Image 1 (cartoon, rainbow, N blue to C red):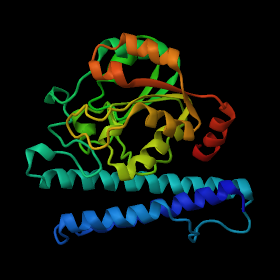
Image 2: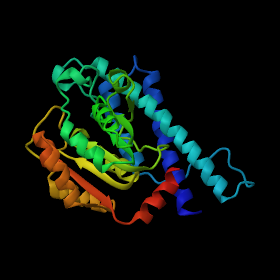
Image 3: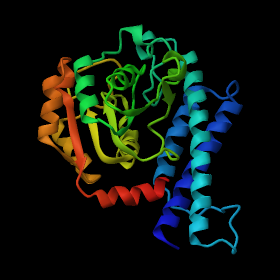
Amino acid sequence: MSSTTHKLITSLCLILSLVVMAALYVQNTYTVEYREFQKFIHSVQDALISAYSMPMIYGITSRHNTDEVIHILKEQRNYASREVNKLKQLLGQIQCQTISEESTKTSHTGGWCSQESKEDSGKHWTDKDLAMALAELFKGKRVASFGDGPGRYKQLIEDAGKGVTYDAYDGAPFCEETSEGRVKFMDLTLPQFGLPMYDWVISLEVAEHIPKQFEGVYLDNINRHAREGVVLSWAVPGQGGYGHVNERIFDYVVQVMEKNELYYDSEKSRVLKTAATVSWLKDNVNVFLRKNLSRSEDLEKLLV
């Protein structure tokens, strides 16, 4: 069995298992105590992420050649990924509706609840000057924002007239409603499949909202979908902020990005820092480039 086929089977097994877990919760919402189920889903999800097993794959017969088998596995994996994402969105919405403490209006995976995810909530800060510098960096490119909040950066960068194709995603359970359709829901604490390969991925001030146990999954999601590079800002320890649970020093960020073969570019980072007017973005925004483009070709074969 090829390594590509084996990776596809493993990811499909993981996602299908998560679908079952989420479906069981939604089905029994009013009979299962939420906090107990939350502990359960965390423990099982952690186990599944490191699992390495062989499921029974339906729809594959001896008549299929290797390319056909890989295509079928990708289709099954991508379908399962979309379904578990929908269920996790519903799970987050249900959780938001059960939260009474005003200070903790976020889902267990870091997504902001309805009122907090609105652009006029007072929780979102948009740096318009930085957006213009990003539009120049992304000129003519296809970009994904993983954690775009209410979608204001999408609006500004598309309106800059630089020919940027920009898809916005966020883990806030109500983001599609509060962004008026500009932003699509995506739980960055789950392995995501079925998305295209983008030239660039941007993730501004998102990582610090991701619980530490899901950090590796989040980083894999943003790095796996970036052909050329990633623009990342990550709050540093002591910065503080609404919903911050995972602040990291700069050296740590550089190290984990290098593990994914993305390397800090000081000049491009300097251009963005100079343009930024919001203090924490000026301090934290950095550019990471993929030096080995053949690596992105290998990743794309698994995605598309």
